[in-house]
Amino acid sequence: MYNSLTYPLSVKGLALAVLIGGGMSFSQAFARADQNQTIRLCQGESIELSASGRNATAYQWLKDGRPISDAGPTIAISETGVYEVMSVNEFNCSSEVSDAVIVNVMPPPILRVLQPAVLCEGGSIDFTAAIEGYDPITFEYTVEVPSGRTYKLEEVPDVYEGGAFQVQANYIGMNCGSNKQKIIVEISDDPVQALFDYQINGLGQKGEVLANDEVVFENHSLGENLVYHWDFGNGVTSDQMNPRFRFDDIGQYLISLTVTNQYGCTSSMDLQIDINENYLIMIPSGFTPLDMENKTFFPKMRGVSSYEMLIFNTWGDLIYEMNSMEDPGWDGTLNGKLAPNGNYVYKGTFNTVDGKQVKRTGVFTLIR
Image 1: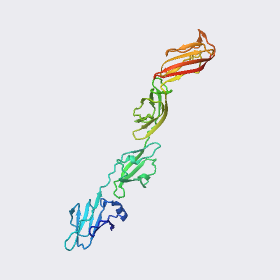
Image 2: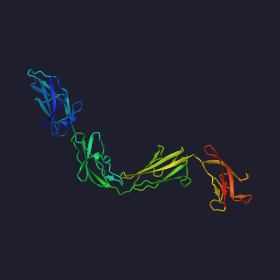
Image 3: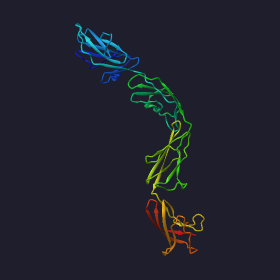
C-alpha cells in the first residue's frame, strides 16, 4: 500500500508524484521532504515515484543523471540518489527533465554508552552524560526502565535506585533505530563531602585577613580519589589540594571548593572571606600587670613598618613611650613603683608598609 505525495515538479505537462511504502503514513512521508524535495528513508524502506505526462507513451527515468532501465510511469526506489524523469510521446519526442527528487537512505544510528552510570548519594542519574556524542539535534532517545516501561529521554522519572536501563537512538521523525544499549546504574557507596578551612601563613590561625596576606587553604574533604577545583571568587582557580593564595584587593570573596570522585560524584562548599586593608592595629582596652597572660599594654600590629605610642595619666603627664617593635610594652609601673589602678590615655602614630600614616587615640584601664 502506497500513499501518494505530489510535489510541484511539473515541466511542460509532466508531473511527478511520490508514493511512500514500507508502512509509512502520508503525514510521516510529507514531514520527511524538505524544500529541496529531499526524502530520508530508513534502510529497508522504499518509495515509489509515479510520473504522468500529457500524451506520454513512455518514460525515461534517471538516477544521478544516468538513464535506468525502467520505462513505465512508476518506479520503486530504495537506494540513495537523485531521481528525475522525462516523458516520451508517440513521435519519440522527449520532454524536458523534471525537477529532482533526492532520496537519502540513512544508515542505522550507532549508539555507544558509558558503563557503569553511577548514582551518587542524594542525586539522580543524568543519562545524557552516559551517552557518547549525545546529539539531541539529530537523534531522539528513548529509555526502557527496569519495570519495562519506555520513556522519551527527557521524560524519564528521576532515578534513585540501581538497575539495568535500555537506551535507543532514533533519527528525529523517523523509525531508524539503533540497537538497544544497556546502561547499568550502580549506587555509589563512596561518600563525598567538600570541607575546608583556612589560616593566615605565619600566624597559624584564621584571624583577620589583610590584603597581600598569604592565605593557606586547608582541605578536609571526605572521599577517595578526589579531584579538586577551587574558585577564589576573583576569576582565579586552582586544582591543588591545599592551595595558597594572596588577595591583592580589599573586599568580600566567596571561596568555593568542588570535589569530584572517580565516579563523577561531586560536593561543594562555599566560605566568604573578608579582605581588609593591608595593615591591622589592635589596641587593648585594658591590661592586668599581675596576670600571667595580659601583663603589659602593647598594640598588636600587622603591616606596620614603624610606630610611636605615648601613654599619659589623666593629668596629661607622659609616663611611658614606646617606638620599637621589640618593646614588650608598658608593665604598669611608674618610676619603679606600681602605678595606680584606673584609666590612662594613649596616642599612637603608625606608619604602614604601603606608606600610610594612621593615628589612634583612646583610653585604656589598668586593673590589679
